[in-house]
Amino acid sequence: MINVHHLSGDEYEVKVGGITQTTHRVTLRDADRQRLGGKDVTAEQLIEESFRFLLEREPNTSILSSFELPLIGKYFPQYEREIRERLRQG
Image 1 (tube, rainbow, N blue to C red):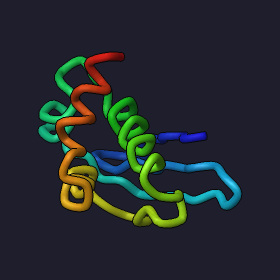
Image 2: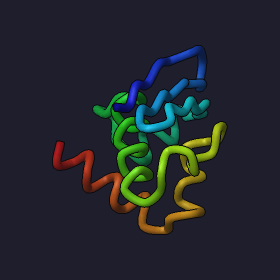
Image 3: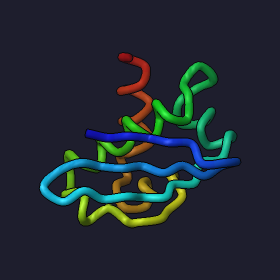
Image 4: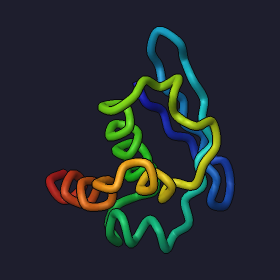
């Protein structure tokens, strides 16, 4: 279970269920949302799919508690290409 909640401005709270529930604070600027997801993808859609991407690679307890969404690409170089493909496929 991934629950994305807009806090204010560029800040979002993401709760991830599992054996241990985790809460993450994610910063997503609109320019990054458009670059990674396109103009028709909401911030919540992009963040949720990004967490699915992360959860395929690591447990929720290993995901940083606070980060800017583009940081994922520094840990996983294929992230930007793959997230665009996933969002295009709907």
